Length: 483
Image (cartoon, rainbow, N blue to C red; front, side, top):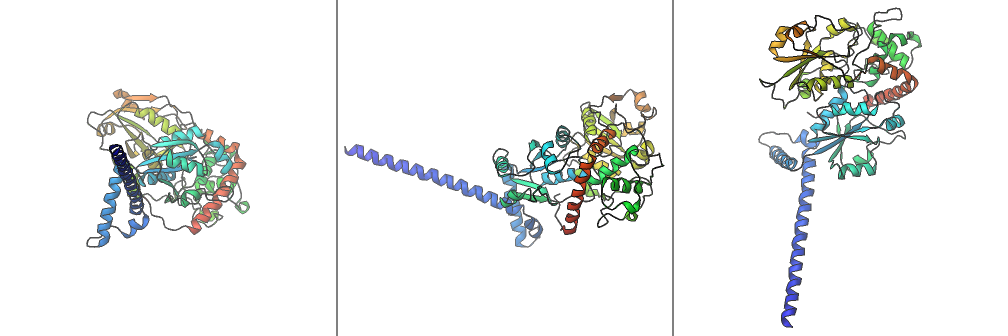
């Protein structure tokens, strides 16, 4: 009897000890996790970057090193996952730069793309359908995963799904406000949860101005609007302002040309951002050439940011593919052509023609985007390994030798006039020229027709957007840009 009681007492002690040990381990793990997250958040905060940067001989130098080391160790154990969402309609280099900055906030970038129905309900009709927008986002080199048909508003239910199913650490958006139709902040819940980060909006780019440039391209639908009658930023105003910039008028037919190409237009800078309300046509001075002057300021740092820093260059035995063109306003037609070209070899080089060459080949209103803007669009594509800025219009033996080109590719869908017979003569003589069937038949005309079909709705959409952009520029403050 005594032995049984002793055994029972011993069993209770063992069970109690095990329970204490398990509880202690769970508590230690929980404390460690909370500490990791707290330090991680503090280490990556804007205040830390600005005020605790390395300064030899100070305490901040020591703490900065410790926090960075701790942050790096934790990120090796579990990469920091970032979520960013949007419509991504008519994508331009501003969208690409936002995705680049979002990826710089962490290690793994998840992008949510809104459905057509959600965009229609909250912003107005999209130019591109959701399938086209999915493909455009998937082609961006910084994107690791996309979520289709994501809600326009970050609801409590969807935010919980992001944190549990997708293991998202932070939700990221630009510093420009994003409001729902009822006036609420679309990211209000993420901000309250302390899981929101913002990135700097890219200056000198506007979707409104893209619409104007495409409308100008379609001279058959263009109407001349007297200066004294233009009082608001309507579609007629946009068409008029771009006509003024390009030195065109109703009787000038030089800007009327066949736009059958693999191209639509996705992004550029607004010519009337310098004016408070954009109402002074006299402020829009004509450029030395007919192409619309961009507000984009090219810098070497921006080109480096968009280049693939991890690329080790081309190997000696690699099959190098070369494709050239304007790639004006990077779009899904370009993406499909580049994807098909990359499948033919190991290393894809894209030659971008200079502004003057594009203007001479296609018409004086082209290109809509400057060479540097076009470079950013192409560099953001994951199928591209290298670009040649200001590439010659005709393939030469020197070009083939310098870049060790194995195959010169051109798409079957041309913009405007047919390709010159002499343009690829050297490549054809060497037997390395190949014309690929362009997977997409999307053309500039098709995109313009989409806009003209819903002209009233687009007008209301962009007038509303212009007002919100004006408020943003009036009250904006400096925002640190992620490298």
